[in-house]
Image 1 (cartoon, rainbow, N blue to C red):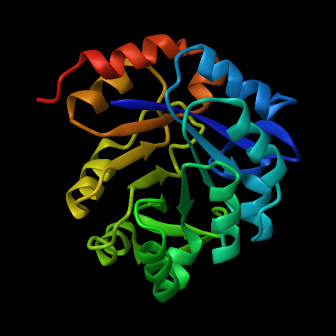
Image 2 (cartoon, rainbow, N blue to C red; image 1 turned 30 degrees about the vertical axis):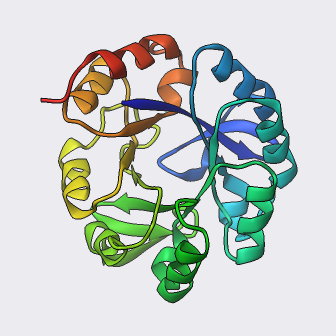
Length: 242
């Protein structure tokens, strides 16, 4: 199972939010670029980056910083937050971003999302943020009445690279992932599922790996030194699904 360290960018700094609350922010580093290099030095093979300003403002805000990250490291990165049009997609890909996570418009503008998925095959990731099993949008500021699994099933035939599913209630809480929700989501789609939210221990990583998930995103647990990244990578690799 692939381990993706998370880098959330707000006001040009590397931060973490608790349950997606912009009023509950912890700053972990002044330079997201240095943090990206740090994770690479500790064995990361893929990074998950979120433009929190972009998610809130509905437009890319930290493109320059993310471009610098992409050009400073030799591993792929995926980026989400504020991606609302084709120009933004192209700008990120031109900047060296490997793939893009799109959430809000996948829910609110399905025709556009389908068109972009066909125009950029294997370059888009369906991002679904769930709160109590329902889709949250606009940088987690709104919760819809659409079940998360229903949204995923709508796009099962598209040439998507993966699906990133985040359980907001667990995000930043260090209480362990919502395995039941993640299993339900995995059954709903044919493409790789990247799980996110609540991972707090190496036992959590092993449990996800044992269940055969493709990848997981880890944020606060790494920043709070619950365990080192190399140990998480080892936990994800040494446990066979079964």
